Image (cartoon, rainbow, N blue to C red; front, side):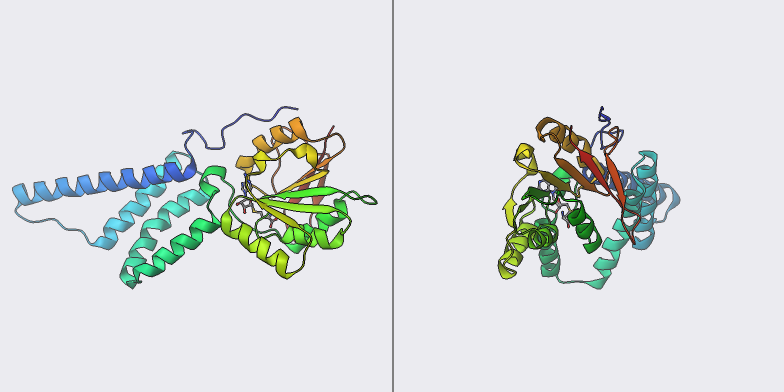
Length: 268
Ligand SMILES: C[S@@+](CC[C@H](N)C(=O)[O-])C[C@H]1O[C@@H](n2cnc3c(N)ncnc32)[C@H](O)[C@@H]1O
C-alpha cells in the first residue's frame, strides 16, 4: 500500500517553527512601521504625538499573529501559541525575572528538545498502560530483539527488559538529556536495557524482531518507508497513537483509560 506523500509542513512547505518565527517577525515589522507612520502624520499634521500603551501594542501583535496563522492554516495549537506568546513575553517583562533564569530554562529546553526542530517529534513519555499493552503483544516463547525508537527517559525499554530477561531490549534517543537520564536510570536500576544516543534512521531495522515507535504524525511516512524496506517478514512494527496514512494496520488495540490506540503492522 502507498504512503501519502503529503508534506507534514502544510501549504508553505516550511517547518512550523520557521513559519511561526516569520509570522511573528512580519507582524511586528508591520505594526512598528504603522505606528511610526501614524506618529509622524499625527505629529506633523495634527499637532500631537500619538502613543499607544505597551499592552495594547502587544495585544495587537497577539491578535494579528493569531489571524495570520489561521489564514496560513497552521494547526490550532500553533494559532494559540501565536496568541499567547507576545502576552507571555509582556508578563515576564513585568515580572523582572533575572536573566540567569532564562539562560537555565533555555539550556534545559535545548537539551530536552534538541532535535525537535528537525524531527518534529517532541519528547513526551508514554504511560504504564502503553508499556503493559506492548509487553502483552510481544512474541512469546522465544528470545527477541526489540527497540524503542525515540526512547526518551527509557521507561518502555526498562519495563520490557525486566519482563523479558531472555531478550535483548534496546532504546535509541536523539536528544542528549533524555538519553543521559535513561543511561543513568538503567545503571541505578540494574536494568539490562541498552540505550544508544543517535538517530534511528541510521539503524538497520532488519536486526530487530519488534520496532516500537511513539513519535508524531510528521515522522510516520518516513518511518513506514524504512520499515517496509528493511524489516523482515513476520516481524512487528508498533506505533502508539500515530497511524500511517494509507497503510492499514494489521491490528489496532484500544488502550484502557485513554482514547489513544496502539497500531500494529505485521510485516509481509
Ligand atoms: C514522544 S517521545 C517517546 C518517548 C518514549 N518512547 C516513551 O514511550 O516514553 C519521542 C522521542 O523520540 C525522540 N526522537 C525523535 N526523532 C528521533 C530520531 N530520529 N532518532 C532517535 N530519537 C528520536 C525524541 O527526542 C523524543 O524523546
